[in-house]
Image 1 (tube, helix red, strand yellow):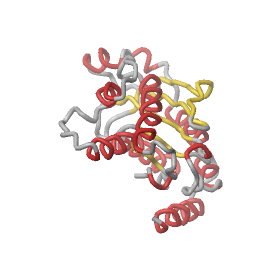
Image 2 (cartoon, one colour):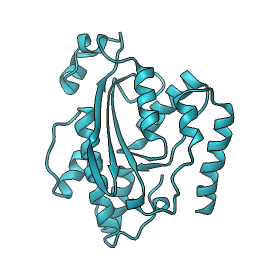
Image 3 (cartoon, helix red, strand yellow):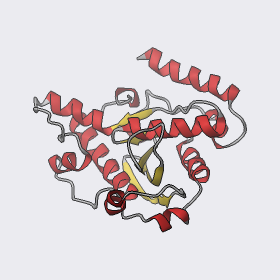
Length: 228
């Protein structure tokens, strides 16, 4: 575990030396949170992307939602939602699922502006996402595109945390078990509208707090215990 803690900071410093001025340079200029800190001492950014598909190399982000957690409470005043500008036409199925039209996308926010908002929010904080490989992968692709360096922050995946707890309880996992809204049902959390980036970010934030309370009822864990 010590190698994980020290390794993240060494990688951050190496990336900083190669990163041009801008939001990513500012993120790398600030030390990452102390991974030995308790959850109540740490700020988290919970992020969700809605995309045209699951291929990080070729698909596009069409909306982003974000909310922060401070002192183990969801800070609703930090929440925001953006539709992201793209000229790629959506399929009829995507329009139905996401409730986002081609006209809405044409009038959306530039992806670089959204990326910089996310990076500024993440400075000095820990990223949380459900199936975080997707959000992390898209952020990495965008950072390579605009800054020519990799993306790096301490990251927690609520899907992996929930899987750990379910296996501890000897639950038989099926393909759908670890989906966000099925997991929320297990924790008796309220149902929200699916496939909206902001409501999914809020759903993930609530699930994160519920799973951590289940895994560590005495709240005796450290950030390093939760990282990917």
